[in-house]
Length: 457
Ligand code: GDP
Image (cartoon, rainbow, N blue to C red; front, side):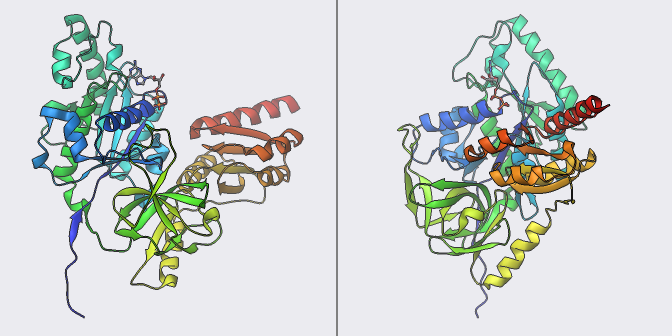
């Protein structure tokens, strides 16, 4: 064998958006997607597959004078489309977070709220670099939108009254970041984004400040994360399942973010499954056609291969048991058994303890299931069964077998009740709790138990 060095190439950094409910995560993602699409560049594809790729060209088209594309050799930014901190903390890559960078969205009028604090804790614990998007600056009384201007200049153009109100709110957020142990400042005053958190005032509604945010994320990745972005582009692909979806003509498919190596059509892959890892062969790699969203068509284009970091839909036999949050690994240069063991080891890190009695828990990803289990353990609520996926008839049947009334309950985090389970639920003595916020779900359940106990006394 000849000794050869791998051709390392820089991959796209993966970005997650998190923050308190209603602070504007979804709107920000929509605006980023929308402006990339209206920039009209071929690469700016709205993916329909859980991740949006914004190439450097598009960013520089949006950011105008803010950015000199020749300063960059990273290809762009890949945004994970599902907002919320479960998308950050519960989507993993080799035990770490799938996202390389985070955008913490804070409503400039509302400041820090419980989920902002939770997000900050997660970011601190994982040592993830982040930027704060101080959103909704347009709600400042007397705000005068300055189309296409960088946010700093836009702020300078406001009335004295608007300026001082906005300043006050921004300094409040900077103070709250400092209380949380982060030194922070308005982004144009920050020199070293590793030591200081950049705060980008913006409006997801008017789009002001959004190019500035993209520029800051690009700069931060280029200056401080280049080494982590260097990958062997020919290596066996590794990714994380975002969602398992039935797709007409293809059966069960997995929307995947590929964070390392390359995945090719026809590759044998191992995917984390509900019982055992699934070993299967890729039948098609699918990406939405460029600008598909504008034409409101749901069309996919088959691609021969996909390199990190990118989102792709994988069609292959036997994927119906695949789990969101589970690893996807290409088998190449190694045996299938070896890769199966690797996938098992990765899944074993996510452990949910179940008991002979307790509630049924359903969650959208493996990581969120684990987060639910942790929250329930703290609240001393036992778990009878915990699974990834929507709420199905058999979950109701299982919940009914609980031998305490208060445990005849299903707690669904970010999942739906399947249509064919609706009548079962009506006929069963089972209480369903659904929420997209873990602590609220647990609180709702605890309140229910208290009321039940009070009624029995
Ligand atoms: P999420 O829960 O964090 O995803 O928040 P959403 O994106 O759903 O936004 C919550 C509400 O705030 C919606 O009614 C949005 O229209 C509104 N909103 C979001 N961003 C802005 C903004 O920049 N300006 C204004 N005025 N409203 C906004």
